[in-house]
Length: 365
Image 1 (cartoon, rainbow, N blue to C red):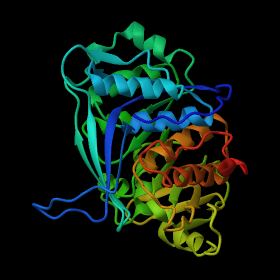
Image 2 (cartoon, helix red, strand yellow):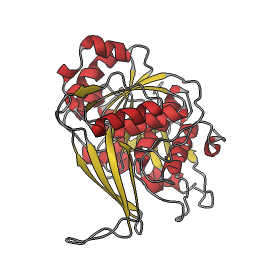
Image 3 (cartoon, rainbow, N blue to C red):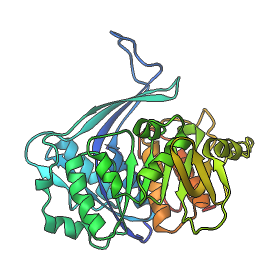
Image 4 (cartoon, helix red, strand yellow):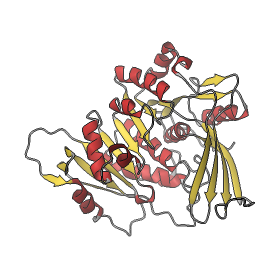
């Protein structure tokens, strides 16, 4: 397994993450195979993967002090997972290691023609359950944490950890790829939600992403913000603001998003952010929310430099965690996260391209 190295920076705030950590077997092909095809790879790599493993590796390289809770088996792949995370400065002392079973792994096929990737995931066995983690051990893991992150997997253990974090008033961030068992309860304790492009409408049944973001904030009043990542089209963020009774203009949220999107400057390659003023955003048939709407653009990566999008969302989430812990404004956070995700896409695998805090691509931040 590969691991990059750089001069370490002093570590910042402690964050704790719970979720998947695995091994990725990546194969680059000239075109996705048809049934019964025999094809050759043009490049390959074996590297650490899993949403939580990737996001916390990103956070570590940026300067946070991440601690991961997850489960592997005592096999070759499991030991490689631990070694790579430790090399990047992620605290693995709260990993559960089963004597038997197998560690999780993913086959990733990267089509160099369409610039797409297909993942075939095999879950680890036995799965992690709450009994794997004593309350004393959990309290020790959470001690001093500024933020706790969940990727939505292994819901029974995630809820066990989240309830304790919630009682200790530790902020919670959830990365929601799709609706999952137990996610609804987890979201009631969540402060920050970062989700895939498909999640908002899948979870709310709303007719558009902006309307879905309104619905999410109404269903989850504890949320400070929700971000929908849109891949090469950037991101949309809705931040909840306190309605202090002042006369605030009310606008349709879909129209507001279209207005902000028209302000994007197509000639700018670097990520930018366009923000609304504090507005009462309305979604007909759903309700209204007082807040600010943000449109984040993605970095324009030349086709010759776009290598692999595996783990780009995890890189974005890792950068958002760094931004939260360092009190970035949304106008700074969204371009920063997009810049980190873009750097990741210029190398093969979820971690090879993850930048360190001193990387020249982050100098402007």
